[in-house]
Each structure stands twice: as C-alpha cells, then as structure tokens.
Amino acid sequence: MEPHVDPIVHGADLHPELHVNAVGSPPRPRYRELATDVLASARLVVDSAPVAAEESGVVTAAIANGSIDEHALVDLGEVLSGRAVGRSTDREVTAFVSVGLGIQDLAAVSLILDTARQQGRGYDITDRL
Image (cartoon, rainbow, N blue to C red; front, top):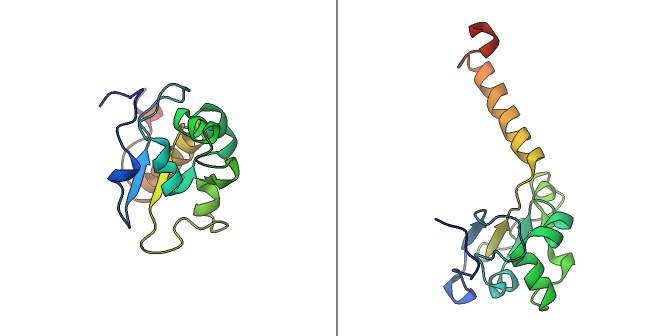
C-alpha cells in the first residue's frame, strides 16, 4: 500500500477494543493515513513524543486543529517499561503512530541476533569471508 496524503482511516471506522498501527506514512507533514479524529478517539502511543509532535503529519495536524494535546502522546518505551499504561480498559481503542526511529530498529536487530545466537541459528558472516 502506498503512503497516503488523505486519511484512509476515520473515527467512524473505530470500535471498542480496536488497536491501530500506523507505520506506513513517511514522517512528513503532508502524509496522513489516519484522520485526526482517530487520534482524538484513541489512547495514542508514539515511538517518541517530541519527534512525533514535530515530524508525524497526522500528529502535527491533530495538535494544530486541537483534536489532541501534545501531552496526550505516550512514548512506546514508557509503555514497554511499565511506566505508562498502554490500554486502561479492555474496551479502549488504542493507536500506535510511528515515525521510525533508528534506535528502535537497532534494538530489534540486537534482540534477533542475540536470540539466534542463543538458539545456535545462523552464522557469523566473518566466518564466510
């Protein structure tokens, strides 16, 4: 699917217990796959609140039109560490909006490599040179 300038998911598309991952649009102000009413209707988790508030088109649009307050953004790291709640009730709608942080990619690769090594899978490419 191509990134969208015009939202393709709207608040009317949401229902209780739903989770939306928005990771397809480049972090540019004009790209918005989610309508701002989606963010206003959901518990909003982002990979980095300061970065999302500056670079995510859907987040900056929602802040600019008053749909959300910048303080409503919850960092994914805070949720994963238990310092913030991801979902406060079973019926709550949640949304994750990603701008794509290299450090998170590096952490994922590190976890994958460590797991592969522990399981004796794969091989070190220096062995093949």
